[in-house]
Length: 257
Ligand code: BTN
Image: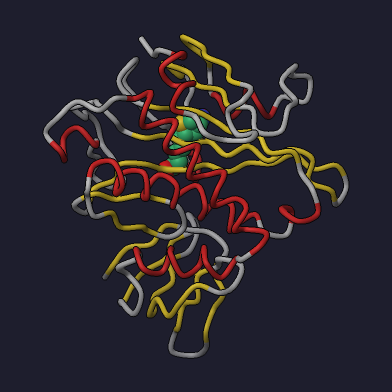
């Protein structure tokens, strides 16, 4: 059982998580916050579900997470001009918030896989699904969905990348309340950087990405491209150096060849 009071004591934010919704079960925390008719409209609202019956991942995958063991939650950001043009950097900020929290609390080295996976010992510990609702050209709601394998010890099934949990890597149970508060504290701090100093986000992201300069494939579900992972650009898109030119990749799955 998640102890909201313990979590609240550790939360040190101005707005992220100040409106906190706890649910035993939801279909998906992202779907819950994306619903325009939802009563939850405060910027920074966080919805945590102990179980999702239809947890979603990137590229139409399912996100599996054992009840009561992990953290599956979404953060609502109300659109404004400053954040709208920096959606990918918000993605990176969320990934970095998870990575930095693991590093600070458990002294583990993390790696980031483009666009938004967090890896421990080369295995996936967290994934992020950012979705938004627009009205015309205006983004009204941005929902940052974060799944973190925290205390689950056994993973069954077929996975795109082998999963792990923080517990499996540190050989100890993790205090979920403290960890979630740390992630949200870091996320709010990094979100400020997104608008004030995007270069900081890119620098921190590059430092943890061990695929830069490697020969990779990028697959978007319909086509696969080969090349060298040259860099990310100022918006967070992947720059793939192919034989002919440098391609700007907006989305896909990356693998080292
Ligand atoms: C991925 O790696 O493909 C992204 C996984 C994102 C999973 C989280 S769990 C909380 C939120 N609600 C969802 O339905 N998905 C995201």
